[in-house]
Image (cartoon, rainbow, N blue to C red; front, top):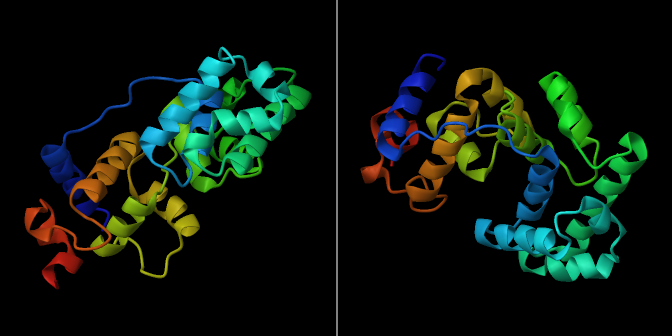
Length: 218
């Protein structure tokens, strides 16, 4: 398995293109955006985040102090507005109380496991949200699993069918080289959306069909 992962990734890069890490981003902004992305589309997540930033001029203190119902209205397009608004404000309040500022930049100085544990101590922040925030905003060697990657990993036999999403995060993080985490995450998500669908995967168009036990038995 360890030897085939680089080959499969290289094949997918050749087919879909390779996306490289573009550099650091604001950790708190990425965390908020990732909370908004839960159970919604990328388009609606972007609209909700832009609405939030535009309405409050990018001022996290204003967002923390705003009436909850106002935040809910601003981010309504992302769905689950009440839950997401409460979680965003709770995170901002905790940072204000613990750190005296609305920033997560201190996480860059932590080992990845310690930074991940800190983020997952916030209500509503699970392993995927924490890993994506650290990978995308800080370029840290965390590997976020989403439904596309979990499905592909199981079909390729990289992990067992019984492996949970939580278990898969650590397993795949260990098996995919750290320097490939960002590019591998992006290309596997792209492959899942374009070809390896949950239902009726387009196996005949798949560039890794010969290496996929699920395709060979289909």
